[in-house]
Length: 194
Image 1 (spheres, rainbow, N blue to C red):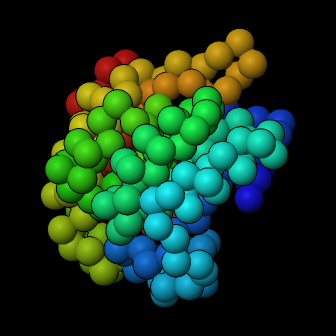
Image 2 (cartoon, helix red, strand yellow; image 1 turned 45 degrees about the horizontal axis):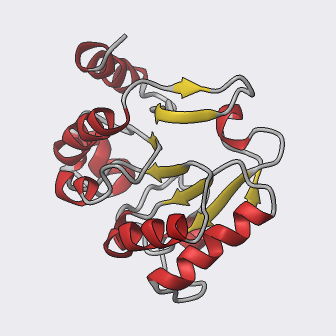
């Protein structure tokens, strides 16, 4: 549906065309989408049907197609995006991710995703294990973030204030985790363009 609660350059005034996927590969104790992310629910959809959903959202005025937590289903993303574009999809694709995914999976999306919207949750194994059950989170997230940057580059915003291309990293500062937030910001400052 049309989602109005992302960053302003994603939601705009008409909403982002959000497609939420179930079966998240993390178990964050603070997840706002816990009811749908941690179990398999909703409608089973193939690549062709997903392309039709994208076109439907575009026809409803969505500023973009926002693939939310699509990593566990990345095997059909490329085919869906290609099909949708062949059928007339003309709005940007936003890949909204927890960053716990492989570079190989992201490379299959090279040239297909316009805006990457990754969370960068942790740098330490202890915090990742405690809050999300993924002690190896940063081992995957750091190279994933670098690959997203390689593909999409710096954020480009149109005259209408909407993101057209690039990457926006999000980080949630958890209570008592200011040191973790500083470490995340240090990684960003040391590894990504100004």
